[in-house]
Amino acid sequence: MNLTISGGHLIDAASGLDRIDDLHLAHGRIAAVGAAPAGFHADRVIDARGLTVCPGLVDLSARLREPGFEYKATLESEMQAALAGGVARIVCPPDTDPVLDEPGLVEMLKHRARSINQAHLYPLGALTVGLKGEVLTEMAELAEAGCVGFSQANVALVDTQVLARAMQYARTFGFTVWLQPQDAYLARGGVAHSGPVSGRLGLSGVPVTAETVALHTLFELIRSNGCRVHLCRISSAAGVALLRAARQEGLPVTADVAVHHLHLTDVDIGYFDSSCRVEPPFRSQRDRDALCAAVADGTIDAICSDHTPVDDDAKLLPFGEAEPGVTGLELLLPLTLSWARRHGVPLATALARITTDPERIASCGGGALAPGAPADVCVFDPLGTWVVSRSTLRSQGHHTPFANREVQGRVLWTVVGGRVVFEAAA
Image (cartoon, rainbow, N blue to C red; front, side, top):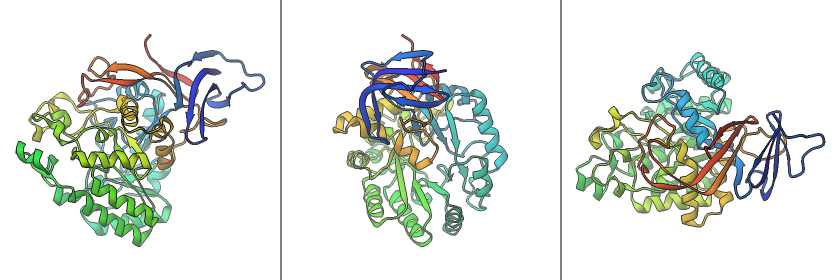
C-alpha cells in the first residue's frame, strides 16, 4: 500500500530533518520526503497537520515474557503495547525460560514474532549457558540465528575470568557485549538505594559502589581486550562520571538509562510502594539529576523503557518481597518528552535518544526518515494528554509508578514496514 503522511512536523536526527513537510511510503520503504515521486499515487493519506512525525521508536530493553512466562505477558499483548507506544523495533534480553542460549530458541522466537507481523524483534543472546556464568555460549551461531548482541540480563557474571574470555570471544567476531554494571556481592540482598530513605524504611540497600566497582572492572577489561560494550541502565552520578571519563579516553562503550530513572528517586518509594521496586533501584535526587544531564549532553546515548511486565501475584507483596519490574513500552515516548520539556532539551535531541541513537547501538535498521529507509514511522500529538491506568495500557503488565498520572504525548498512528499497525481511537 502506498501511504502519504501529509503536513506533519518531520523530525529525524539521522538526516538532520526538522521541518513541516509530506512523507511518502511505498513497498515498505520511504519513497520520498517532500514532493511525491513521479507516478506515485497514495492509497491512503494521513493528515498529520499539527502533529509530529518521527522514525518508529527503538527500545533497547523490553521483556516480552515469551517463552516461559506467558502468565505475566504474551508476545501478542506486548507487541500491541509497543505499537501503541510508537515502538517499531524491540531489543529483548535473554532471560526467558528457557534462556536464549541456543540458536534454535532464538530462531523460534523470531519466527513467532514474524508470525504476529507487528513490531520488529531483535533478541540478545545469552553470554553464558543458562546465564549461570560458567560456560560461554556459541556466540557466532547465536549471531547467525539473529542475535544483535550478548548479555547476562540482570544476572551478574561473578567470575571475572569467564567475563574476560567472553569479551575476548566477542571482540574476535566484532560482537557487542551488553552488561548491567552491578557487583553481585555488594548488591546482594539489596532492594532499595542505600541511603537515608532505605535506612528509615528498614530496607536492605544497594550502594552506589555496587555500580562503580563493576564499572571499574569492565573498563579495565575493555582496555586489555578492546571489546565493544554497551552498559545497560546506568543509575548513579558516580557511574556517570566514570562513563564520561571512559568516553573521553576513547574506550568503545555506549550506555543507556531507563526512562523512569530520569523522573523518580528513592523518595518516591513512599510508604513501601512496590510499583517502585526496580533494578537498579531509584537513587537520590543528585543521581537522577546527573542522569538527566548525561542524557542531554550525550554521555548516555539512549533511553529505554526497561519494560518488565509483572503479574499481580508477584507485585502486590511487601516491598522487599515484590518482584522488580515495571511496564514501560507505552510510556517511553511521553516520559521522554516530559524529561525534555523539564530540562529544556530540544525535541529533536530527545527523539534521537529513542530512535537514531539506540538504532546505532543495536544496528537493527530503521531510525531514519530518508528515501530508501524502512517505512517505520511514529505519528504523535506532542500536546495530547492521557491518563495512565489499567484501562489505557495495552500491556498485560499494569504495574507502574506513573499509574493514575496524566502524561503528555499521545501516539496516533504507528507504521511498520509501510503498514498502519496502530491507529488510536478517535
